[in-house]
Length: 245
Image 1 (tube, rainbow, N blue to C red):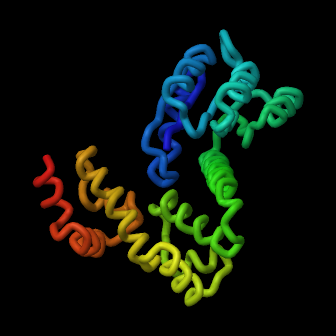
Image 2: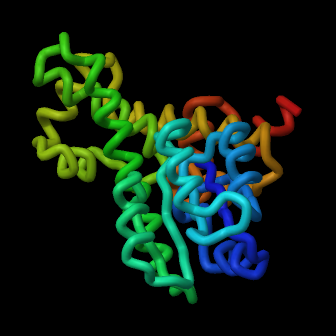
């Protein structure tokens, strides 16, 4: 996931960088822009999922930028930061689709809460988008396609038969049986396969340690991750990396 930080003051941009452990929010790329004009170019080129912007900036201010985003890149979720508490600015920001408004100086907890709120909004929008093409599928089957999509998108979270059953308000036995009936694999194996495929990409495209990759794909235990990886690839993660260099 990609994020763009927009502020004409570099110390503020640096501060936002330092306040967040981006991998905790599944954000792997952070861009910066120092004004609205540069931001429009960056948004057009990089299409960030999340934007954190100052409201009052030179050249193109935050509200003008919000209007441009609303008409040209509405999928981006926007968080505003500002040193001014101007009711009209705040009102216009939310009218144009803003997610949260944080006053400067930025407090870490408020920034983290805004990011969680934004990620929940992105998750909800993705699930709603997925549901639309499934209108011809029965209501019962529809939820299992949602579950499959949920695993594909949120493989890095704590996922198990129990957590998914609770999240979708289903019994574990019925979820397990129906998922296998529709997709010809049990749900635990499917989670493992999705995580393994993402791990393979990270092993070949990044210099990250195996322990880091394990965490990024949803495993806190490096040894267990290596066992799962070997179950699918018949070799350890390090062997896979060496073989495909």
